[in-house]
Length: 113
Length: 111
Image (cartoon, rainbow over all chains, first blue to last red; front, side, top):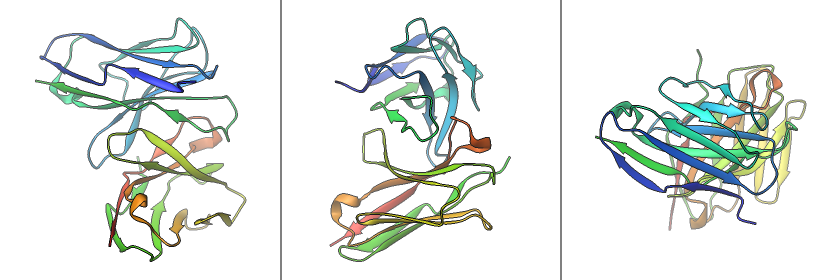
C-alpha cells in the first residue's frame, strides 16, 4: 500500500513548455486534490475531483488543467508554463466524509525559468 | 478574502511546551485541522476537532477551540527535537470537503 505517489519529484521547465504531473492513490479514495505551496502562503487549492470523470476549480485554477479518467489517477497539466508557476505541488486524496483525512503525496518541486 | 492566519515562527527548548495559534475565517467550518510538514515531505494530519467541541486531547497534543473568536490552538507537551516541522491549521469553509490552509508556523526545537 503506497498511499499517494507523485511523479516526477523534481522538474525544471523553460517558459512556454508544457508538462503533466501525475498523482496516483491506491486507497480507493473518491476525492482527489491538487495544491500548490508557496513560501509564506500555505497551501492553495488548484483543482479537485469528487470522483472518476469529474473535476472542479479550486482557489487558483488559472493556467492549469486536470483530468480524472481513472479513479486512482489525477493529472495536473501546465499547457504553457510561466515563472509564476514555480512552486511545490502536492496531491492529496480522501474519502467523501468530512472527517476523513486528506492523505498527501510527497510533492513535486517545479521550477520554471 | 480573509486569510487563515498563523505566526510564522516559534522557537522552544526541548522539554518545554509549545503553543501554536491560528485564527480561521469561516464560522460555518465544521472541522478544524492541524497538519505537520517535515522537511521535503507532504503534509500529515496530526489531529482535528469538531466545531462543537472546545477541547480535544490526544497524547502530547491538546487542541483548544474558541468559536466566538475563531481561534484555534495546538499545544505540544514535552516538545522533542522530532517535533521540529512546519505546522498548518486548516478549516473546511461551509462544512464542505475543501480545506483552506493557514500560512504555516515553523517550529524549531532547541536543545
